[in-house]
Image (cartoon, rainbow, N blue to C red):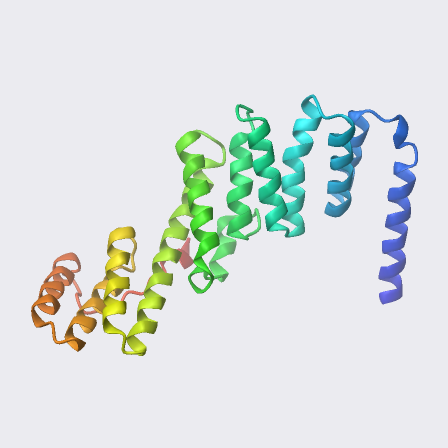
Length: 254
């Protein structure tokens, strides 16, 4: 089977070289057509090479502009986050008023989001709360810029859903950190982290968890007045069942 796979790969490389044999006489249209052909085969590395040649040989005009934005997409499909972001930023810098700036922002947001371009439901199997939040924060800011600047963009609705997911994920990440401090007996650090959740993510479902951490932290530190005040806040905001734990899982049912 490995031999068959190797033979297929070599055959594909040979076909690609054959297609490029007469490229010295090509114009941008021919390069772009070949890139589209290779993208249909998911040969993203070859797509990048072709489009980079197109951009280098024909740096002006609509084909060069389209090549830049499609290079970003090809890097995204290759899983190269840094190169995808760099390509998207290059496009936006060189063409700040282009009709596809919203798409460049979308690609930049997705690159940090590290998910496929399919339906948003696919993200339900992964938990960004367990990851380094830096990329999630950057992704949120990019999607926020997109929906602010281009509220009618075809990518705005999906960006809003992803922003909601990211807010929940970031808030849950902070809960995980606060719980870690609680386990270590760092009561003040845990309370401060929980307070930060309420300030930065006031509408996140995890706010009840933050309040519960604060109640326990104040109790451990012997701050009865602050503990009781926080209990009142919890009861006021969650009157139906003020003692239930609510680590969020709402996003799993989108």
